Amino acid sequence: MDRFEDLRAFVQVVESGTLTRAATRLDVATSAVSRRIKDLESRLGTQLLQRTTRQMRLTPSGERFHARASQILQALEEAEAEAGDQAKSLSGPLRIAAPLSFGQSHLTPILIDFAKDHPEVKLDVDFSDRMVDLIAEGHDLAIRIGNLADSSLIARKITDVRMLVCAAPEFWKNHGKPTQAEDLIGLPALCYTGSDRVDIWSYSSPEGHNGTLQMNVALKSTNGNFLCDAAIAGQGVVLQPSFIVHQATAAGQLECALTDHIWPVITVYAVYPETRHLSARARTFIDYARTRIGPVPAWEKEMCPN
Image 1 (cartoon, rainbow, N blue to C red):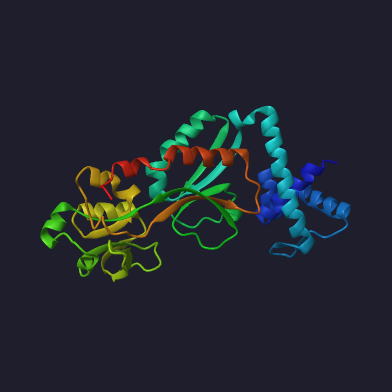
Image 2 (cartoon, rainbow, N blue to C red; image 1 turned 90 degrees about the vertical axis):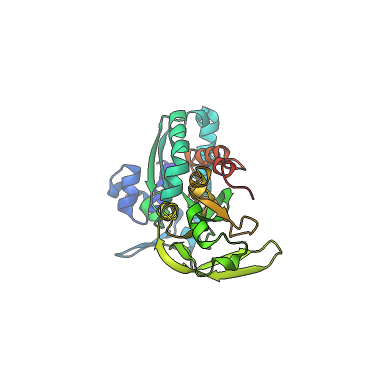
């Protein structure tokens, strides 16, 4: 009888949601996982999971036991890593979800270098702007950008990101470069549909006045790179993160405006479920990414001044 394997089976069932998914991730038969759960409940003398035909739910005893079991497994993994110096020779799978534009532009070199430094880690990266269900889909962590809603996820900040108003130099020449936020009203706006209100842009003026603008939406998209390209083509004005527009501004294809105004600052986070013990692989990658990006990201150094 291996009590640690019983704990691993139980925690994996909770995180996976089904015996079948847990068995797949543990690379054992479903019957073996089921037997471990039954043996564990029998040994403890209490029911940990309520089983129905569609789902499993933790009982109150199961919730308390899961919290302690996760802590025990994490402590065991950390102890093994320290004893075997595995922090320098990580191994095993690491599943990461990341937003498309930021992931391809700025995470790709970090991921590649991390893979080179830790060749025994098997990266599985999902570049997508959809909201991935980390537990249901078996991801270890996700990189998310913006204001995080209340959830069961633990978040570690990686960096803050400025939002900037930009347009092609020819566009400003034809429409007049704004000197105050209200000058943007009526201009064709290229808007990101991932925000709560596509047509509303918030700002703080140099004098400290907080305001909102209702923009004239000429084009909208879920992808910031597309909006940046449309702005370069002269189709309108964008409010986009500095990590998307930095190359175009450095090349003179886009020109920032109203840089003395403060537009909403967004934050890049690494998030993971509070119910899951974070592996040494995941912890090392988060620290690796934070160090590589740094307090002043490379893209900010290429940007127009504050």
